[in-house]
Length: 167
Image (cartoon, rainbow, N blue to C red; front, side, top):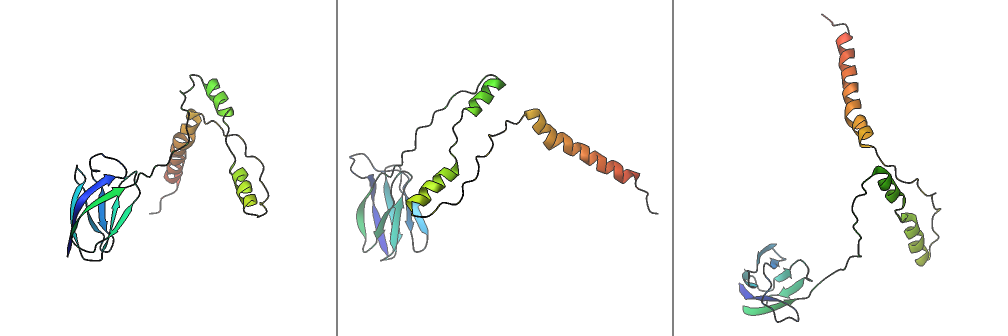
């Protein structure tokens, strides 16, 4: 048995330890977490592989050889997402329709054709541009999904009631 103890830090910083880092023995899938100060104590078998992971950081692997105090440094793993513009909902239906009509929706076939050309393949035939999205009226939606089904159910019940009963 090997007792690992130590602290988990952010690589390249002089800050205190990283709290609540997940520490897993990959062989038997058992683990623990570091405390609020990044300190941990973990007992495993010699030669077991231990993985240190935390959201926003790259995983770190350690193979246990002997009982010792470790200083594990996790490297930041950050992905920047493209900027998105959030606008308020238009106040009128005509303004909403106009905003929907002005949306630029990139067709997936454009991306497919470009990627296949880069890979040296001939792209499949491109389908015609789909029609613009239809704005659904909430009243007609409710009619189709709720009221129409209720009417159909009443019609079926009435038909069952009118059927002659076998005695």
